[in-house]
Amino acid sequence: MNAYFAEFFGTALLILLGNGVVANVCLNKTKGQSSGWIVITTAWAFAVYVAVVVTGPYSGAHLNPAVTLGLAFKGVFSWAMVPGYIAAQIVGGMVGALLVYITYKDHFSATEEEGLKRACFCTEPAIRNYPINLVSEIIGTFVLVFVIFYITGANITLPGATEQTPIGLGSIGALPVAILVWAIGLSLGGTTGYAINPARDLGPRLTLGLFLSRKLNTKADWAYSWVPVIGPSIGAALAALAYSAMM
Image 1: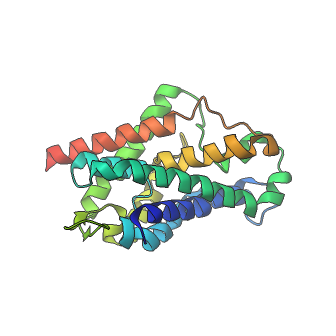
Image 2: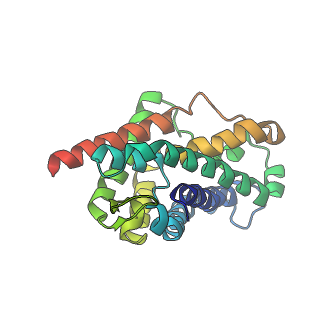
Image 3: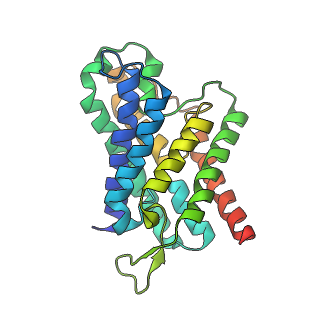
């Protein structure tokens, strides 16, 4: 499997399962309606596990531009591959969100509240305060990337490479990272919905804004969209700097 395609496929799978649980909990007349935050955070953690298991051997299963940037800042991932990885992740997020819509189409139709439908695509803060929201995303992503540096260590040989390259999520088996994402969601996710992944938010937001907004009578809330992109990017860079300084 091509590394870029693996990132696309893995991110689509991540969003299908991750945003799928949000739809199951938030939308009307589902089997899981109103089952709560613990269900959402647990399923998101398992979604990471599934996506990493599938794509880890081929791309390192970054599945997240923040992870890709963090590894590049750390000096263990080629900057030349960063644009392709991020593009694949964002497009994968768009496709995954579209599949969630197709799966839950009848339940979207049965739900009138705009915020509940939008939540199935992208994040928004519980209390809108942009500076604090930004800091929340920085802190959550810092924890994600910083801890990943400590629980990774294996290598893969990327297509066309002549030597092995240290990789991200896929290098340790998926379970420790799934537990990490679970912990972040339970402990830090109540402020902004813990995007901690620009592709997880921007990809589905693009799908909603470009293709489904009128159909669902739901706005994509572009005014907030910069927070889950800039925040995780800053958090990843700070994590790389902190880890390098400590090492």
